[in-house]
Image (cartoon, rainbow, N blue to C red; front, side):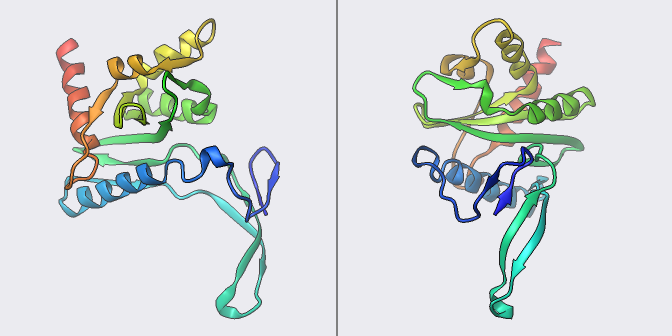
Length: 197
């Protein structure tokens, strides 16, 4: 079984609940394919972060069939991806929402918020990519915009409406090469930031 940082055990072969089955798999594949394209074209070096796991019990029924029986997440992971683009450090997480009205802020865990904030404060480009099923569209949402909604959540609404995501986010176009050109959306964000300064 794998034990999460909260010390709650979950069997290795436990199935996700029906509402979360394969959630994020398609989006993650699009991001991974895009990152491979960026690397092959020498546009950027961006990779998925490995999850820090400590294996404590392995069964060896045969040498070629080793099975992990028990493992622990060493620490909560921070975000999904990081790397370099045009000499700038970027760090981001990938989220999805099937809601027809909003994206709950509780879907961004506190350790991820803390990490994105630290990256932003040190001059890196911190953001999340949110895929909205209702619009069949992905958006890049910069950390400064996320922070606005986090501050509001302390006394008010604890989610972002889909219209707010459209207003504060930058549309990511899906295509063939690259599959999900989020760096183009990142360029648009940076250009709008420079123009407003």
